[in-house]
Structures are given as structure tokens and as C-alpha cells.
Image 1 (cartoon, one colour):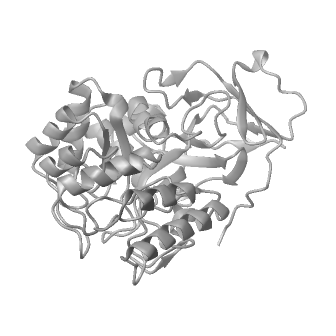
Image 2: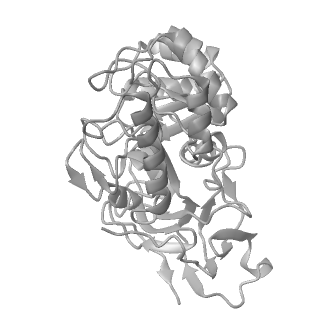
Length: 396
């Protein structure tokens, strides 16, 4: 099981000969630059090689004219402990997902833990333990932001204060526990927000035993920060209700792989028509009954680009910069001071698309040639994507 050494420092890294640099910023998705400079895991320069200080690099990477993008951020996962999922009895799923270009994952609740405690002391203890464990452990180098308690009846504001003071920053999906009424959820979401904890609400039909239908009226009343899997996880609300949520709520619109694909397309189109594409974020909602999807994020990008007819460079922003800004993360954007988390991609061999972006627009997923987290190479050519036409090379 590959585990990153968190204390490891990248030193100075230069990435040169970039063919296409995607920024993650939906207002300016493509950068006119061919070089990145990194020092100890943070971006220090973005520009043309002639204008960057490239001397004294510990590592030089020739991108070979391939695309460099911010590492993908999976906004909705259900980890438990380590790189293991009891939902599917599978080891190594996080490391495998890194081979799909994902460098950060955000927990929507450690709900698949066998015997998950539902009493208030137990759920708080589980959240704090998960937060601590994944803060110390990075499978394949992936940053897993975990410790997302599922709220239950009887919790008070003091419980949320305690969680926040212990380092918990997320709530698990509202609606997966005993709190299902809009007025109850609204109060607890407000307490969480007051203490700096971000909330996500389950949307649609039940997914696991103990969950239930969360309809549009509950979602609107609860006013959680993220409308979790707006296209259902798995079962979606009616398309008209989903579009109503996009219109009446100002919160993040989360679209997931393990949901209704038709409604995913409708939600993305609705966001564009409402002129709020910055609200759209992507996740997999895995592990789940349909399994683990190491390429789930890339598949979502290709799905929305090809079938919703959204330019691929914008959809990549849904999976990177949009999520970073909504989730308050120091990654997901190519700009000075951000974490040097990158995925190097090229068009898959023998795709009909003439360029990477065109191939994604046609529905093909790209080939991943390298993944870098905190300025450190975590994998070369992906073992999961189709082979990229060209791959970057570590010069030294």
C-alpha cells in the first residue's frame, strides 16, 4: 500500500515544455504559459520559460507538450480507515483513484464503517478519529479531507463547537442519520456554519439503510452549503425539481458519477443557463453499491463535455478550481502560492479527437501520463487510463 511521507519536501521543481496549461479558473480556463516553478510543494512561478527562474532545480520535468491541469478534486467520497473500503471489500482504492488524476478527496461521511456509532459521543469520536487519521496518512499521496459526522437528533450547538475545536471541518451528508426534517436540519446546519464547519445535504432517494428521501423542499429549507449529489445518489429527484434547486438555491451544485446521468446533464445545463457555472462541482459518491471508480472524475468530465456540450476546459474547472474555492482549499488552481498538485494528460492513443480538449469533447477520457502532489511525482503513466499519446519525462 503506497503511503506518502508527509514531511517529504519537493525542493525546487521546474516543469517546462507544457503544451496546454489549464488553470482551473472558470473565468480564465487556459493560461498562456509553458513553464511552472515549484518550491517545497507550492507554485512560485507561472509563465514563459524565458521569464522564469529555472536555475538550481532539484527536479526538471519535460512535459513533452502535453497538458498540465490542477489535480482533480473529488468532492464526494465515503472513506473509512486507510486505503480500504468495507462497502466493496477492496484495498487500494484511493491510490488507484490517484491514477485517475485525483489528488484531493473530500469525505461526505464515513458512513460505511461496520457498526458505525450513532450516539452523539460515538459519532463525534468517529469524526475526530477519521480527521486525525487521514491528516496523518495519504494513500498514494492523495489528500483525504475526512472526519464528516452524520448528524443525529439530540445534538446541540455545543457538539458542533466541540467538533470544530477538535479540527473537524465537514458534516457528512445531512439526511443519512435521524435528522431528516427541514427545520431540524436548518438549525444544525446553521450551528455548523457558525463554527466554521461546511455542510452537505443528501439529495434524492435513499442510498443506504437508515437514509430516506430528501426532497427539494427539505434541501431548500435546510440551506446546506453543498447540494450533495443533486443528480441523485443513486436515485434522483424529478428533473424539474433539480432545475428548481439550481434556480432557487445559491449553494454549490454537486454532480456525481454514481447518480442519474440524464439529470447530471440537465443540472449542468441549468447552471449555465442561470449564469452560475462557478457553483458546479464534481464528485464520484464512491465507494458505493456500484463500486469504486478510479476514473470516475475523468468520466464525469467527458460526460458533461460531450453530452451537455460544455467546452472541456470549463468542465475541468468544475472538477478543480470551482471545488477549491467552494471548499476553501489551497489547491485546484494554477496560481502562485497554491499547492503544486497536477495531473499531466494527453489525448488517448487512437482517439478521434485531434487535441486533448477535442477528444474529451467527443466523449473520450484522456490518458494520464503523470500525477504530482505537493511537487512530488506520485505516478508516471497511469495504470488505469487508456495510454496517453505522449507522456512527460523526468529529466533529472
